[in-house]
Image (cartoon, rainbow over all chains, first blue to last red):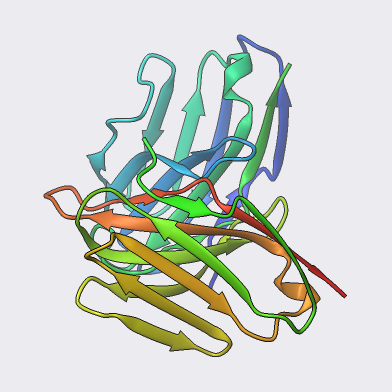
Length: 115
Length: 112
């Protein structure tokens, strides 16, 4: 069964360092999402891609976060510099549909700890 | 901001009992989805109900939607220890920008 792949699964870094997360969506899924989930909360959308184009990045802290999906397949989310408040689970999801009209398939997530 | 609010925040039941979880939301929607998350893992889609539907079933799951009350419920029948997880409702609000907004989740514990 096809799955969304994410790496690394865990990342520990010191504040002010740069970190990067990678996501490979299910083959053929045009829409890719990055979410941040703080412990005890639900996921919050950071950025949504349709193929290689950003559809929504209104909640992405653009002073330190960047995301790209250059060839419309896999994607990278970067934080530079990391802050203590960035400690969270970063989830990638994909769907075949445009927008939220259909179910989303989530990867296992990257647990980030900023010291 | 989180549109959906689940109730209760935590639920503990005995194996074999039914579990009912509720979700309320604020604005009109295209659809409402329920997801499950096991500890430290990604979310798994359970069921999607569209705004013109009132009830859907999937195995031991039953979801209802009342758009007049802006609420939904998820019923898990004959619960199992493996159902222990966090459950989230997510709404796709009406509007040009279609995206899911998740609630804070319900922690379900099923005691063997």
